[in-house]
Length: 360
Ligand SMILES: Cc1cc2nc3c(=O)[nH]c(=O)nc-3n(C[C@H](O)[C@H](O)[C@H](O)COP(=O)(O)O)c2cc1C
Image 1 (cartoon, helix red, strand yellow):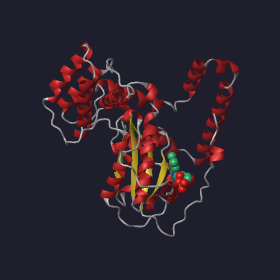
Image 2 (cartoon, helix red, strand yellow):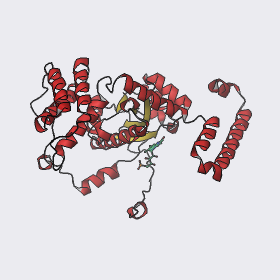
Image 3 (cartoon, protein in one colour):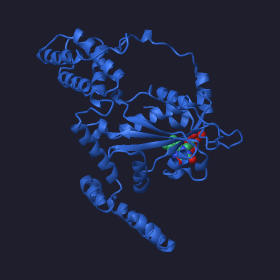
Image 4 (cartoon, protein in one colour):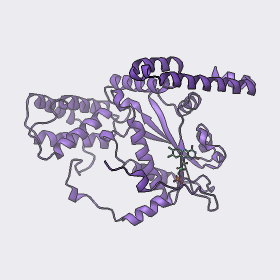
């Protein structure tokens, strides 16, 4: 309806309508800032929602995510958010100082059942299953078997019979001193961060898919809440395709046609049973995206993060083009390519520590 109106109405009328909406919005905000509404957030929320549906999409996506989580009991297409979260919780318990003789009693049966379901489903990534199996084995051999734990062990042992180990090395907690240390020093890292600039002008050089995959592998090393990693990278590594995807985001006009590769970072809200975690896809997705961009720099590739606005039309177009489910949301786009040597880069002054830091 809105799209048809946008196409048919004369420009002047559209401008007048926009001005009226904007005035009404200011009026509404003025009313809601009155002490009566400030003292009653429920009342102000209801009134706001009556006239402004801009949060609806987010709310629907969160609800669709919760429903999908419940319907699938936390087990997704090739990964289980529940198994990942609980395996992570077990690893924390195993790493605790001092380690307790009994822990995780409240969720160990759930974890064993989820593991069993994942083994039976036969579509969960094998490294994920191995991690869960190794950690569960380590857990069961470390704790005292109370009734709950014994029940969980029974479920786990039965499920394990059908599983085979992916590799010999165990995916279990280890001591910090065993960690392989990087040789990058602060100066080298600073130089890499200075080298990464938002680049909008690229050469025609084709990007090897293997480089994109490598950067994604590096991005996947980023931290994420409970190690769920609730995101995917949709890649359009094609001169014609990349601009057509990047066009859905408003902030690419003027340079979109020379983008050789577009990556859409998509968050999965079906990783959460509760609303309280609705923001986590944006945090986890962005941390991984940052790592992806730095990884690209080390391969001689440049990038430009692109904002994804929460607007009806772009959301619908992107969801249709990528075949996204109701609970999958674009987080941001990233334009990738080899920088054109003479292409201009904004100076982009950065805030200094003295401005950013507030001592507590
Ligand atoms: C979340 C996010 C959204 C952005 N959206 C756009 C965009 O839509 N169009 C664009 O040209 N640049 C976009 N940028 C790039 C910023 O303008 C750029 O990062 C910023 O000016 C700082 O410059 P630098 O990246 O070179 O340090 C975005 C950056 C971020 C982090």
